[in-house]
Image (cartoon, rainbow, N blue to C red):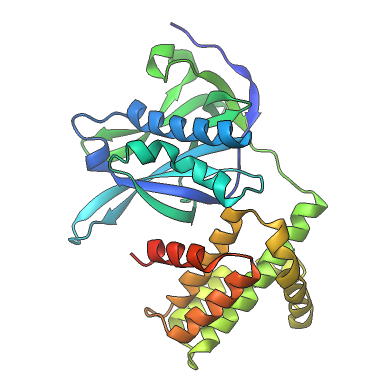
Amino acid sequence: MTISLDPSVPMARAQQCVTYSASAWKLMGKQGSWLKVQQRAANCLRAFNSRTGHDATAWFAAFNTRDRNNEPDILIAMYFATDVKVSPEQMASFDAPFETDPGVWTRDGMHPRHEYSFPSLHVRSAKLYQVWLDINNRLVTRQLKRGSQGIAVWDRAFPKASADDYLPNIRHAEGTFPEDNSDAKRHKDRLKLAFAMAVSQDIVAADGRIDPGEVAFMAKTFPPRRLGTYNLNDPGERAAVYAQARTELKDVLGHHEKLALLSTFFATCYADGSIDPAELVVLKTACADLGLERAEVAMQLAKLWK
């Protein structure tokens, strides 16, 4: 059975995503398949959309890692992205399918998408879409498949595709990536950057010593070019925007964006290979400015500290 394409749909581009992961060998062993992986993502997307009415996109990536025994492993990560402001209750909607069937997946909290991640499914107005991508003027869907060399990304071209190769009762559409250049988004991003850098600087200084790992982390996370994009290279201007951010961010950020900043602050704490109690005080104060409850902060830290 051949497939037909609906009009294109815009993908969620958020870098910070609700993230789940699983060992590729456990997930795609003899009884595993890509469609089963997709089905789990589809269930999560439908649960989120039915409870919130918001669009969301499921992204995937596979990358080399090591298990708890320090043995080589391949991890499959499933990222859920939404570009709207969501509450803690709305964000928790992604968890619904895991409550009755956790399987081998681990909930990892908020994480940035891997640089090699690709969009696979999208939900919009209660309709689930298989995402097609224009890769070098060729329309393809991307899948993760197990082969002799491990897990690889495999492209299936549109002319050769059959409806039997995809989830049932799904629509097909090319995914687009429209830029949001609105003044409101730029203002929010500027506040986030100034806030994140100021808090990270306070964390680095909290234990009274500066480690080379912390210097490298700050240089990588807050490069001058990135600061210049938002006119934040001047320390005085950055301090003024930080003061503004302390009062505004709690009202303009979605819960997932607040947790993403918490993850950045945790990474700053651990940049020197250890975490000092004084650094955690700075982190928790910043989280209070964002409007995060103590219990939420503790729960997220427990996930990041595993």
